[in-house]
Structure formats: structure tokens, C-alpha cells
Length: 88
Image (cartoon, rainbow, N blue to C red; front, side):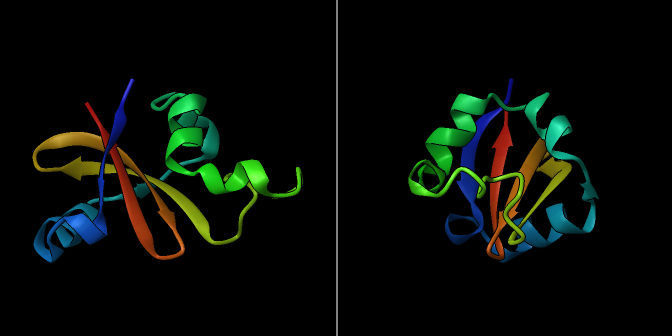
């Protein structure tokens, strides 16, 4: 399983642009086949205090992708225009 590595704020524009250019949108189910629910809960703790109808999956500000980051396969969550990157 992949674990959280970094987000675009702590990376470089070059690395993020390269990753985004290669990306392919995936479903939440595919994201979960790469990252555990616990890892997502730890990375996005905001949802534990939200109403049950608002989840990472249902939030209109999120999208899910697979790509390559620094030569490694990755998946990432784009949340409010910030990319959160998970890799091995």
C-alpha cells in the first residue's frame, strides 16, 4: 500500500507539473485499492468533524488521480487545489 509522502506546498512546481501532466483520473474505489482508509483519515482529519454526508469521496472539492512522482508510481488526491501525494 502507498503512504502519504508530501503535498504540492512542500514540493516543487516542476515535480508537480510533471506529475499532473501524466495523471489519469481514478475512482475513489481505485484510490482505496492503493491507500488504506486509515492513511486517508490521518491525512484528511477534517472529515471526522464533518456531518456524515460530507466525506472525502463526496466532497466536490476533491478528485483522485494516478501518476508518476519522482520516477515512482503514485496516486494523489487533489483537495481544494492542493495535491496530496501517496507513493511507496
